[in-house]
Image (cartoon, rainbow over all chains, first blue to last red; front, side):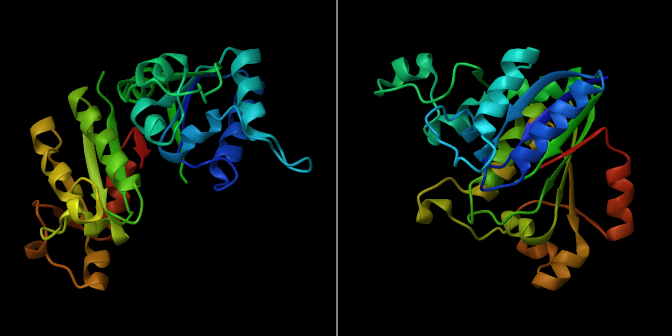
Length: 130
Length: 118
């Protein structure tokens, strides 16, 4: 089955990001394909490459990056929601002449059209609310 | 093929940016010719109040954005009747016409969808 996922909550502030990550890993383990993980609202903060997880807590950012890199899962952050929260990739950093790119390169910055495309192109679309 | 997508809007309009960002997503779903419905419930009903001005708190006016939904082909607007009763609101307080649903009707609306999101 082809599954896409929306993540609405910020890592740590909401349990949604952790639950979504576990759901994605379980789905892959069962042989399903993840078409796209769409990070919406505060969910975009999962891309923050400069966060440091406490030693006794799960590193959610690293977990998402691992999922993206080792399973080829597309990690998409909503451009409008990302920009206002300071999540910029290299291209947006250049465009807005900011000091640093803050989003890890495993994440791609996309428009809301990709959220709807994920809905139409997947057998299941699962939202993890904040 | 178009999917039936329901946006459940249950957050107050100015308590966070979630309402605004969810409406943006619903508008884009309309642009992409999906069968979009919106259900307002709980504090989400405040998004529909006709007397509101987001400029006063440094943002956009949520009610005005909702006003764009019909232009984007999103005309199936529903609202939770029991929520309105609890909040003391009626259709006269709202900036858009909605279809009022009780809990049983909301359940059947939800059951008709391919996708439910917020």
